[in-house]
Length: 113
Image (tube, rainbow, N blue to C red; front, side):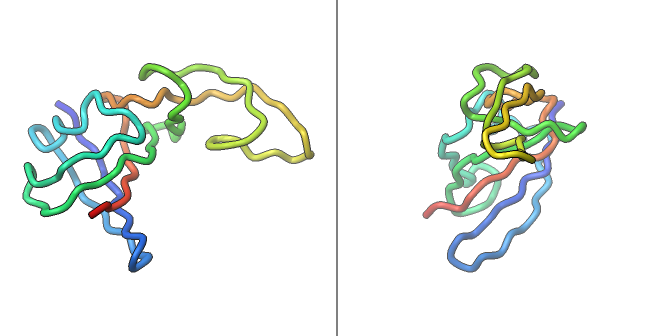
């Protein structure tokens, strides 16, 4: 079964908390895409969160503009998973798609009321 570390950020206070979701709690995140709003009342929290990203065990980041859930090489000039050393640089980088699967280790979410 799936197991995730969920980092919940609160933009009002500027603080983050880490929550562990295993088995049945993790099932509400499976198949969700970056940008979706998820109601956490099913697992005992009384608020909704917006999925903003995540990474797998090897540290490859999820990108919302990459379809599917697998890893792909993407030609990038800016954005998540890319730091340029020279202005205008392009590089092909390995990133994960924007759909949550069992390979994802950490999920980043923002609390939305």
